[in-house]
Image (tube, rainbow, N blue to C red; front, top):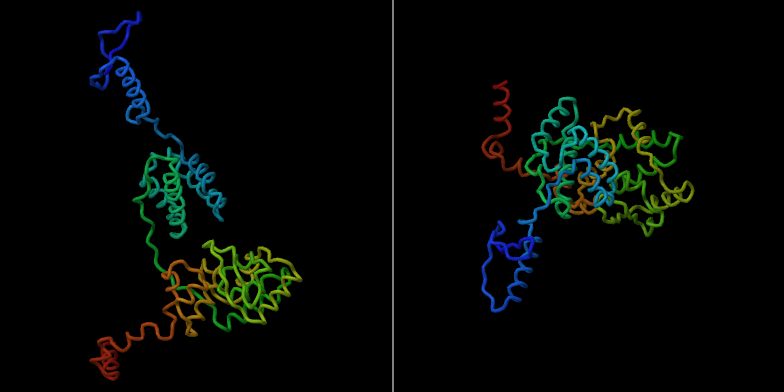
Length: 340
């Protein structure tokens, strides 16, 4: 290291502690310039001038995430509220000190109180997204402390859908309700296009044209155009011209659905019309790839949930199973009878 100077300005025999640099120069001016350059680099070097540890708490990180990214999401405000409640339940730890065990312990306690596994997985995903996004933006210098925490494994549930008789019952019940004119028309558009209820609620009247309806406020942020019948187009235009744009009325739909004798699994009421469209589309011989485009699924795996409803789905199982090739129907029946 370079030598120091005493109070009189003379060279001090006592060297400054630290890393030593040796190099020969022809002139003193070159040596002085080199000394200045090295000192400047050492000040800028993170190894010699480390940043203080990030002590921001989880609530502060959530606020920063919302300011930098969350406000751009369609559900950003709702997600921020969930994250702040979650941070409070975790006792608002310093972000970099949060551990997977803390989250798992909270998850176990919430599960014991009856919180659904899907809800817990959503909360974990929201929390991971905060750290991932802040790290991606360079706002934090440490990796996601929850990257190894796995979601709860859920039992896949069969999607419910309405029969033709159920559809008639539901539409009749909606038409009979006088509180709002919108739910019956929204339901018909959902059944005809497979759109989400919220997508139809936000429908722009100008996008109902030429035998199609275009949804611009979609979950995937991509516009989607679906053909509709001339009768529905005329009725939809007349409705919007007379009653104005659709309003938020999902709760009205839920109440009417609950008042009927139609049984829908918990959590599927909001999407029952979308499931009904997709299910009948496949049962009537529709193509799975076409259905993917109509529903706006970015992944075919999502659409494949309806594949089992296809008339020819996995029929090879009947033809090529071992009993079909080695046993006759009478032998199989006899074997079942004898065993029972």
